[in-house]
Image (cartoon, rainbow, N blue to C red; front, side, top):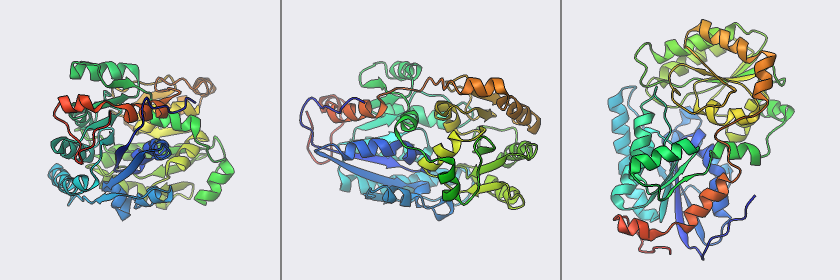
Length: 401
């Protein structure tokens, strides 16, 4: 792996915003690399699901990884309506308006496309803090995240995309390729560079006996632009399909807290209670999730992890419905409709020797061997003259370079 080698001495405060178990799992190696670099102060701003007990209070995972949480920005939805999400965004912006001036970062790092990340990025943009956006330029036509992701791109100054077509799309959106870099996907880099658990270690950690190749990992999120049926109805189709595979155990994880998540949680709790072969868990954490996926017969659901990371584990993905429609995919990813028959038939295809062999090739368009090193170097050597010329100024008066 290439050694981090800045062109000049760096003194920089870099704030990493994280709101879910999923984005922290991706951001952790980057945070670790920055923390190990002389002259860099790493700040962690935690919000949303990290601070909710019903979703596992995953801020503890950040602290257990040895990081101090510099700011906690609480936000909570009153109910499942879109109006409640907007009010939660306003609460997040109000909290960030208090915390970001106190932290005075030189750069704010945000990842992905969630509504709370738009709130964080909007606040930083108004405050004049340069934003580095990871995983822009992608498409997921079945979720409102698609629009939010592009909005965050327009607010940002540095861009780290996960594949070359996405770099080209961001450059087209911005009208320039300056500060737009294809660095590959952080999650794929994690797979190649993080030691994973053996099946025995995983079983012990979960308190749930597992046999490699004899279980599924399943996650179902609301597809927020799906007007054809309720999220619970869509999820139930997946659960019914899993019932047709009684010889396979299931590790079932909670959804994100998008609109419709509460009814999914109710459905999966009710389903899991009467099935001893099912382990329902709020959050696996990065290492356990990747370890579980690596040893699974297939990963099933509609999470982006099945599209981006799982192919590098040599495991088939069954992608259900419209949520991830439009994403670049490797050949191990099988798309299917959202009826129980569609899902069950696709599971059978995924379990076939032919598709298992294809999946073992680990072909993945998101792979890049130097993802963390490249992102780290660009964050450290970013020329603030660009931000000055665009009206973006650090809050505490220090401009590197």
